[in-house]
Length: 356
Image (cartoon, rainbow, N blue to C red; front, side, top):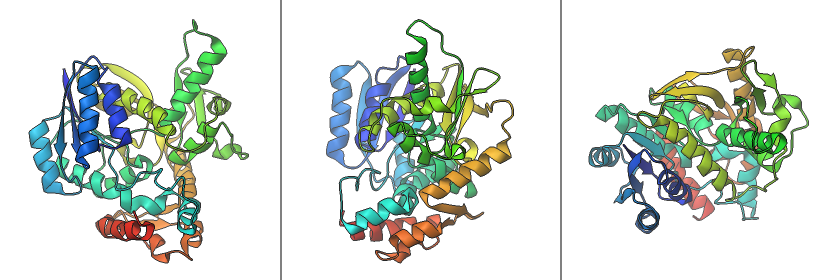
């Protein structure tokens, strides 16, 4: 029976808690972070609907000592990190020039809002010697790679390519019928490709499409990623994200057995890959004919659509020219090279700019 620590009492944290509460091998859920009211609400709902023990711990998880204390208090088997300083959907309904500039630039300009918590968590994990898996939902296709440069990569990422996998499996179920056994599905895809997959709009360039492989021999079926019901970008995506997260976290629980799934950023790699998870150990599960170097380079090219040009050996992020041009008239400092040490300070400037 496992104890899971979920960091981040926002919408995603509450949804993940609700999903894990119905996982038979989970006996306690600990939710941590700010604000307190949201955390107590999420914990109260778990207590109201299941027999799973649940509690909330108020903690500033941008502060490494606070996270170290949290780990000592909660004593988890698995850590789920889903906190950020700004929701990816915070600007979705805004039409002002600043919000439009952020949208045009790509998610990478909000990296200062994504990095501080996951970095503090991973620094605390290393400092305390926590040996269990850490799954990160905060822009893992990029943040896991940045932290890898610092020796702080989470075990694996959450969301994104697993969402794409669920969409493919849903398309197959519709095609094959309720009684058919689904084939093995392996998906290689990046965060930026979630949007066209969820909108059911295949990119015109086949090279920009999610790579879908069926069966052990890996028959290509990329089209399956784009034939589900279309959904416009927004909080509705969180429902699919939560389901994808729960699938991966379940596979990370002690004694879970062997799971073949696709998940973001194993080993700090860019984008998402098929993996085998077995008793907390993760190995790549690339289909025949897929070379890791080529796949990683392709993932990095897709990351440019998010505004990431490169990640240096010290974790410094360089932004694309397109991202720079998109925010030039709003705040050119948004696309100055970003080292993780500078993320929290820049996050404060972003919060002021956006009047959050």
